[in-house]
Image 1: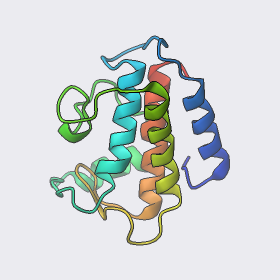
Image 2: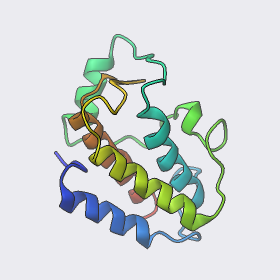
Image 3: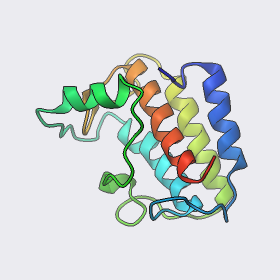
Length: 150
Protein backbone atom coordinates (compact mmCIF):
# COMPACT_ATOMS: atom_id res chain seq x y z
CA UNK A 1 0.00 0.00 0.00
CA UNK A 2 1.18 3.51 -0.78
CA UNK A 3 2.37 5.62 2.13
CA UNK A 4 4.15 8.89 2.82
CA UNK A 5 6.68 6.84 4.77
CA UNK A 6 8.11 6.04 1.31
CA UNK A 7 10.23 9.07 0.31
CA UNK A 8 9.42 8.53 -3.38
CA UNK A 9 5.65 8.58 -2.75
CA UNK A 10 5.98 11.57 -0.43
CA UNK A 11 7.98 13.48 -3.07
CA UNK A 12 5.36 12.65 -5.73
CA UNK A 13 2.57 14.05 -3.54
CA UNK A 14 4.55 17.22 -2.87
CA UNK A 15 5.20 17.66 -6.61
CA UNK A 16 1.48 17.25 -7.32
CA UNK A 17 0.64 19.78 -4.60
CA UNK A 18 3.14 22.17 -6.15
CA UNK A 19 1.41 21.76 -9.55
CA UNK A 20 -1.92 22.91 -8.10
CA UNK A 21 -2.95 26.44 -9.07
CA UNK A 22 -5.51 28.68 -7.40
CA UNK A 23 -7.69 28.40 -10.52
CA UNK A 24 -7.33 24.63 -11.04
CA UNK A 25 -10.90 23.43 -11.64
CA UNK A 26 -12.34 20.64 -9.51
CA UNK A 27 -13.72 17.51 -11.12
CA UNK A 28 -16.17 16.81 -8.29
CA UNK A 29 -17.15 18.11 -4.89
CA UNK A 30 -17.49 21.64 -3.59
CA UNK A 31 -13.97 22.61 -2.49
CA UNK A 32 -11.95 25.12 -4.46
CA UNK A 33 -8.22 24.49 -4.84
CA UNK A 34 -7.52 26.95 -2.00
CA UNK A 35 -10.14 25.37 0.27
CA UNK A 36 -8.73 21.92 -0.45
CA UNK A 37 -5.26 23.04 0.68
CA UNK A 38 -6.74 24.35 3.94
CA UNK A 39 -8.63 21.08 4.40
CA UNK A 40 -5.45 19.03 3.90
CA UNK A 41 -3.44 21.25 6.24
CA UNK A 42 -6.14 21.18 8.91
CA UNK A 43 -6.48 17.39 8.62
CA UNK A 44 -2.83 16.82 9.37
CA UNK A 45 -2.57 19.46 12.10
CA UNK A 46 -5.90 18.84 13.84
CA UNK A 47 -6.79 15.17 13.42
CA UNK A 48 -3.28 13.97 14.17
CA UNK A 49 -3.05 15.84 17.48
CA UNK A 50 -3.60 13.78 20.58
CA UNK A 51 -6.30 16.09 22.00
CA UNK A 52 -8.91 15.41 19.27
CA UNK A 53 -11.68 13.32 20.84
CA UNK A 54 -12.00 9.68 19.87
CA UNK A 55 -15.49 9.02 18.50
CA UNK A 56 -15.10 5.89 16.37
CA UNK A 57 -18.02 3.51 16.43
CA UNK A 58 -18.13 -0.25 16.55
CA UNK A 59 -17.55 -0.52 12.77
CA UNK A 60 -14.18 1.25 13.05
CA UNK A 61 -12.00 -1.84 12.42
CA UNK A 62 -13.92 -2.73 9.25
CA UNK A 63 -13.88 0.84 7.95
CA UNK A 64 -10.18 1.15 8.74
CA UNK A 65 -9.41 -2.10 6.92
CA UNK A 66 -11.41 -0.98 3.86
CA UNK A 67 -9.75 2.44 3.78
CA UNK A 68 -6.16 1.56 4.69
CA UNK A 69 -5.86 -2.14 3.92
CA UNK A 70 -7.38 -2.40 0.45
CA UNK A 71 -6.74 -0.62 -2.84
CA UNK A 72 -10.33 0.68 -2.93
CA UNK A 73 -10.44 4.42 -3.70
CA UNK A 74 -11.89 6.82 -1.17
CA UNK A 75 -15.56 7.40 -2.03
CA UNK A 76 -16.47 10.84 -3.31
CA UNK A 77 -18.77 13.08 -1.31
CA UNK A 78 -18.12 11.80 2.21
CA UNK A 79 -18.88 14.25 5.00
CA UNK A 80 -15.80 15.56 6.73
CA UNK A 81 -15.04 16.32 10.35
CA UNK A 82 -16.23 19.88 11.23
CA UNK A 83 -12.73 20.86 12.44
CA UNK A 84 -11.29 20.30 8.95
CA UNK A 85 -14.24 21.55 6.89
CA UNK A 86 -13.49 25.04 5.53
CA UNK A 87 -17.25 25.73 5.44
CA UNK A 88 -17.65 24.97 9.14
CA UNK A 89 -14.86 25.15 11.75
CA UNK A 90 -11.86 24.60 9.47
CA UNK A 91 -9.44 27.20 8.17
CA UNK A 92 -10.55 29.52 5.41
CA UNK A 93 -8.12 30.22 2.57
CA UNK A 94 -5.69 33.08 3.05
CA UNK A 95 -2.53 33.28 0.98
CA UNK A 96 -2.49 30.38 -1.51
CA UNK A 97 1.26 29.74 -1.19
CA UNK A 98 1.10 29.84 2.61
CA UNK A 99 -1.81 27.38 2.61
CA UNK A 100 0.03 25.11 0.16
CA UNK A 101 3.09 25.11 2.42
CA UNK A 102 0.93 24.26 5.44
CA UNK A 103 -0.43 21.23 3.54
CA UNK A 104 3.07 20.11 2.55
CA UNK A 105 4.46 20.68 6.04
CA UNK A 106 1.66 18.55 7.49
CA UNK A 107 2.64 15.61 5.30
CA UNK A 108 6.27 15.96 6.29
CA UNK A 109 5.35 16.22 9.96
CA UNK A 110 3.47 12.91 9.82
CA UNK A 111 6.25 11.22 7.85
CA UNK A 112 8.85 12.40 10.38
CA UNK A 113 6.76 11.71 13.50
CA UNK A 114 8.30 9.79 16.35
CA UNK A 115 6.36 7.16 18.29
CA UNK A 116 3.81 8.92 20.47
CA UNK A 117 3.78 12.14 18.41
CA UNK A 118 0.52 11.35 16.62
CA UNK A 119 -2.98 10.81 17.90
CA UNK A 120 -3.37 7.09 18.68
CA UNK A 121 -6.96 7.27 17.35
CA UNK A 122 -8.75 8.44 14.22
CA UNK A 123 -12.33 9.70 14.72
CA UNK A 124 -13.70 7.13 12.24
CA UNK A 125 -11.08 4.36 12.01
CA UNK A 126 -10.24 4.03 15.69
CA UNK A 127 -6.78 2.91 16.78
CA UNK A 128 -3.95 4.24 14.56
CA UNK A 129 -0.23 3.49 14.43
CA UNK A 130 2.39 5.77 12.85
CA UNK A 131 2.26 3.50 9.78
CA UNK A 132 -1.52 3.82 9.64
CA UNK A 133 -1.25 7.61 9.73
CA UNK A 134 1.33 7.56 6.91
CA UNK A 135 -0.98 5.41 4.80
CA UNK A 136 -3.99 7.60 5.66
CA UNK A 137 -2.07 10.78 4.78
CA UNK A 138 -1.14 9.37 1.38
CA UNK A 139 -4.68 8.24 0.58
CA UNK A 140 -6.33 11.43 1.84
CA UNK A 141 -3.98 13.72 -0.08
CA UNK A 142 -4.12 11.56 -3.21
CA UNK A 143 -7.93 11.58 -3.12
CA UNK A 144 -8.07 15.37 -3.05
CA UNK A 145 -5.38 15.79 -5.68
CA UNK A 146 -7.38 13.52 -7.99
CA UNK A 147 -10.34 15.79 -7.28
CA UNK A 148 -8.35 18.47 -9.14
CA UNK A 149 -7.02 16.20 -11.86
CA UNK A 150 -3.52 15.95 -10.38
